[in-house]
Amino acid sequence: MYHLGLDIGSSSIKIALVNASTGKSVGVVTEPEAEMSMEAVKNGWAEQSPEDWWRYVCSGIEKLCVQESISKTDISGIGISYQMHGLVLIDKEGNPLRKSIIWCDSRAVGIGQKAYEEIGAEICDTHLLNSPSNFTASKLKWVKENEPETYAKIYKMMLPGDYIAYKLSGVVNTTVSGLSEGIFWDFKKDAIADLVLDQYGLDKEMIPDIVDTFSVQSKVDEKGASESGLSTGTPILYRAGDQPNNALTLNVFNPGEVAATGGTSGVVYAVTDNLSVKESSRVNNFAHVNYSPGKPARIGKLLCINGAGIQYRWLLNNLDVASYDEMNTLANEVPVGSDGVAIIPFGNGAERMLKSKEVGTRIVNLNLNNHGKGHLCRAALEGIAFSFVYGMEIMESDGIKVNVMRAGNDNLFRSEIFSNTVATLIGYDIEIYDTTGAIGAARAANLYKGDFEAFGKAILDNDYVMTFNPKKDKSAYQEAYATWKNELELILNNL
Image (cartoon, rainbow, N blue to C red; front, top):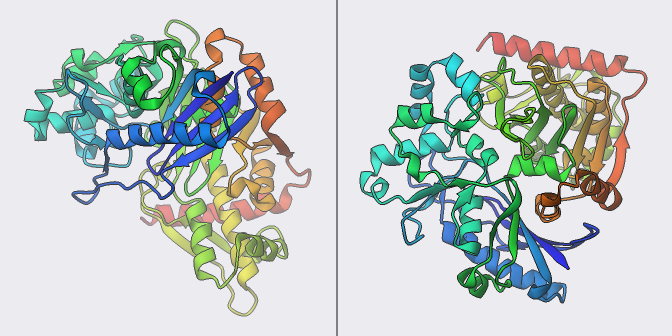
């Protein structure tokens, strides 16, 4: 038997199958083959059609089963991961009332900021662990203010993963972790955040019923079966937003464990039992997948670095080099610290961890006689690594204690320079695993049984690649980081 994992992203839908008993990956497909489009009617807006997600889920399941010669009747459970913070609205017949306002849409920023000021920073920080900001609740308030005729027809609001579960089962529900990412959860009361609903004048009836993250959440009904090809009665056993799911995929559940990704942007996601909100202006806090009301807290602290892999890709496109491999070879010919060259990598918009300042990408200490391509390549990798270390310092000032970082075998973490630099400066191991969010979601379909040890063993047995250990001689790394950090702080102090 097999478990199916669905990962509903904004650029594509990934569908995975794993062996239900061993967790071994059987196959993964991506739909559509070209990147999904986003509609931007105005600057700063981003919308997608929920029906498109569902269509690609159905075609992807068919494609994967044909590719792997597997009967859909052998799929015995479903796990769902999805793009966070999106807003899906349905009427009583279950039809979407408008396109989904997705995570990167910024139209509700002002609404969230006003609410933060009016409710008060202390109440928001201690009850919501965040500002209402540009999260799902603020987007729903935007619809109420700007599309009252749509708002009047709303039966339920959902997150993207809730919608896919609904299309499979005909049942509308959500999770505490999902509500927390929309700023609909009050951590102090361990209940739906009435203080946000009252502030925004939102109807509590629109919030779906809550189910446990790991549970029989619903089962595929006849309509879901006829459209997806799955068997009637197949249970949906897990659902989570993409960043908590990425942490789960890397076996990050407990305080001291950190998940990291190093793609176009970088993400550090640390699990803690500490409700500190000292850095809430720079770090977002959500209920992790194993958060349970009334039990010791499991909070996921999320820090995003916009200026990560996008900078290395920019260099590839503009430096007259053939490949990342060539860049890495050039970088390896240059010593730690890049002979003084430092690159500040924040050229991908405002950085929340820098208090939403626009710093830009800056190359400093470049000597036109002595420095060449290799110095730029190494300084770029080191600059991105240093930004991760800077982010970890912010996390640690917010009460995070760390003993291991786990990362996917993706772009940046494949680089020895990058991973060695981060591991040496943060002082603990970086374990690399070759896995994806869709595979993690599929494996998580087993966790309703509560056997986290077996889940972790499946990841170790199937995905482990290698470990980067901190270098014993840290001095060159520390000196290079001190130079970089000094340059960054000079810039920040002058903005």
